[in-house]
Amino acid sequence: MLNPGERVEIGPSGRKIIYDADGKPCRSCNEFNDFQFVTGKVKNAAAGVTTRLATVSSDDLIPGSRTYTKVPPPDVNQLGRSSWTMLHAMAAKYPKDTPTNTQKEEMTNFLKIFSHVYPCTWCAKDFEKYIRENAPKVDNREQLGRWMCEAHNHVNKKLGKPKFNCNFWEKRWVTGWDDE
Amino acid sequence: MLNPGERVEIGPSGRKIIYDADGKPCRSCNEFNDFQFVTGKVKNAAAGVTTRLATVSSDDLIPGSRTYTKVPPPDVNQLGRSSWTMLHAMAAKYPKDTPTNTQKEEMTNFLKIFSHVYPCTWCAKDFEKYIRENAPKVDNREQLGRWMCEAHNHVNKKLGKPKFNCNFWEKRWVTGWDDE
Image 1 (tube, chains in turn blue, green):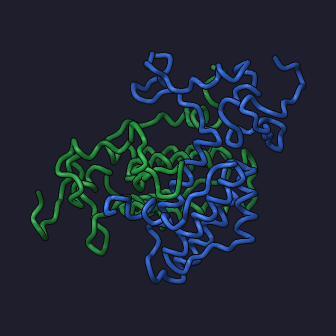
Image 2 (cartoon, chains in turn purple, blue; image 1 turned 90 degrees about the horizontal axis):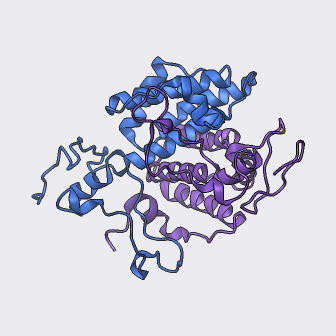
Image 3 (cartoon, helix red, strand yellow; image 1 turned 120 degrees about the vertical axis):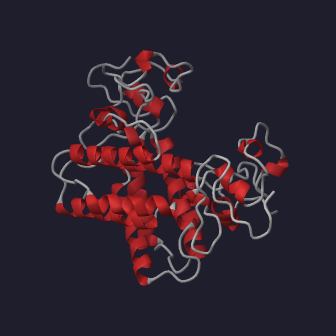
């Protein structure tokens, strides 16, 4: 149990707890279980992991809905997976050879603004720095797809995850693996 | 089986097949199974749905990797889920009361560019039209969160899905449901 005023530094996952500027723990910057722990919703690591409901009771449904259940806001991992899916798919659909100047400017701008509005604040700041030091390459699809793959690997490295071999970026995000 | 030159109009899912400007079926605009069918990878609806691998053999791994498997590019549904997660979470983290003019401009711009670069082209065009007719409300978090919820409901309606009650947008995307 936490004492009043006590501030948790490390969560049950072993990761540092991230707080917002107002002193409250940041939902989109921490793992769900760490967030639940630090807000006093669960007392240990094991209790918090049951986020999927095996059976749906009426208590699990949003009042007035027969479909929507009380799903918690995304944690840092779900947000990361979702956002990379969107970003890689966007690169996969970028003009193959000759984007217009408008398309180049919009893509550059999009990534810049993304680094300001991304909900995980520490991830956003890291991405902003990465963009400043490694300007997005927007001359064609191959360039942008590789740039995105390398940006993702930069994050993988920070998180201790294995690198993805960027020679396969196109198979992973554009063509699929069926023709091997 | 399809004959050479034959163009499929409706996929096994019952949805219209979407083609890119170059005449090829659009991966990010169709369901995975429909895409596999129309590209001749599977011959019927049932065969194509096995996209999750129960056990991982070395054939399933990307060459040289012990971690990354040959996951296909996202289909229209996975892309939709991922992108809405990112967009709602972004609204949830928008300044609560007094965003700066720069923050307002960036958010408006982000959504506009999003409607140009979103990989599902017909979805993108629909979103672009929606934004033109329903300008994003960016004066504070509550406004933006509700605007996003209504934009999502516009798409839910098009797809025949139930509406989400936007009075619950904050619980779903900001606070969670624990304090009820």
